[in-house]
Length: 334
Image 1 (cartoon, rainbow, N blue to C red):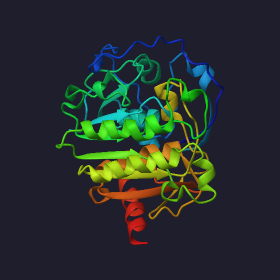
Image 2 (tube, rainbow, N blue to C red):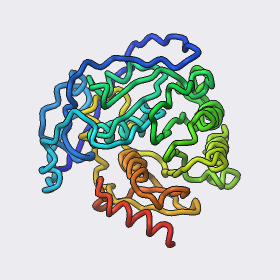
Image 3 (tube, one colour):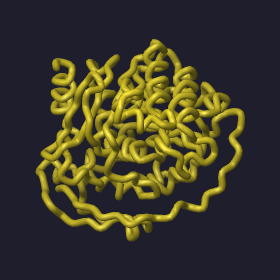
Image 4 (cartoon, helix red, strand yellow):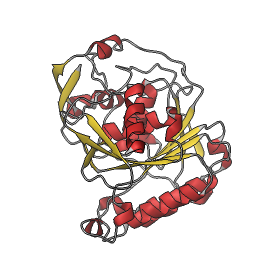
């Protein structure tokens, strides 16, 4: 079943930001309650959404229904089904929220590093700590990246970022240089050598930031700093996959609840185009980008590779791993 959604903006929560300590603080905001999951991926659900945010966030209209989505409607478990422990950095952003929602819904144990942990319960509901752990910290501050943060972590998905041009999101020195370069450098420097994979979300155009039209996007250095972050990952010696999306669409879903995130769809632009060599120009659904990150963790031959990704009209792969394998493989053979 697929859904067409219309969203109404929600004002930011009035949260108080505390000064970070010298070590990451593990937060325990979640009582032991099971996840109200609706599918194994981002297929929509007919299940009633109970969060009070939903009345302001989503209006669902049923368009289509697939047997695979129907079979997954009542899948609900409370213990992780995987030996993975995935650290998501940037988990409250547009792509990051969708990554976390999909990991939870696929029953993969997750850990979040958030500047403001209070956002976790607003976004993802009340979760069992066996499924979701929250640490307070900021990649821009190396002292926040204590080794305790990475204990047991097998994989990392980094989807931090900020706007290309000055905006309110730059408040607190959240500039491209501090976030896309210094933050990535600090994170990668702190990661253990035992890590099985880091997936970094970057951007198309990073190798051409001095050429038009990319030089316009790079007026304040966002593409240059993302490329510097990529290069640091490449030289780190860690197993990596880099995902370079086109212009991001769908969302951002900031301040939406988990069940709403799980109902999000890419409309008609569900088909995925994957390339290499920084040649793609176009748009990419945040939903597709999030799923590409998760799929890359499970596909061995994506290690050490950089992919560009776009969304176009047509039927997409959803969370079907064989279809994603074919897409990634075809990109490497071009």
